[in-house]
Length: 129
Image (cartoon, rainbow, N blue to C red; front, side, top):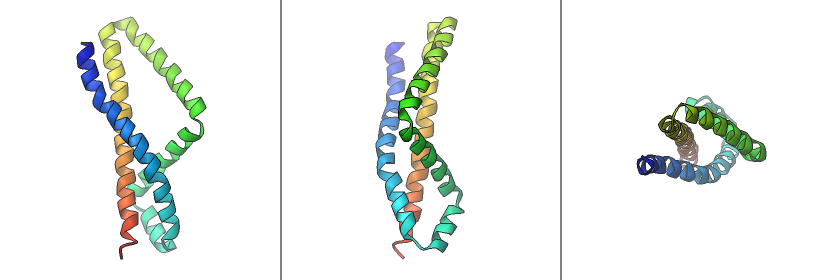
């Protein structure tokens, strides 16, 4: 069971690792490119739902990076309490709970990264005209 759990958990960890590093690359580039385009093009881009989603995720990521010393212990405490309550049910439920938590965060990271990359493509399209 532990080996199977590790096999299922590895892609989620890989997605989160890659997303973390690509966010560090994409966020400053998007901000810099958005400042250099004309105001009417920036207004048109900000009306796009993908850019708004990317902006919301960027704000959340910036808040996390700004307050990582608070966010990480709070996340650890909440997840530890959650795993404790799941472990009271059974060991298998706790393992599946951990897998579901990691899958949820990997899915959020993937959606955020997809929105960031689509925004980056839309912003760079203004420079190729």
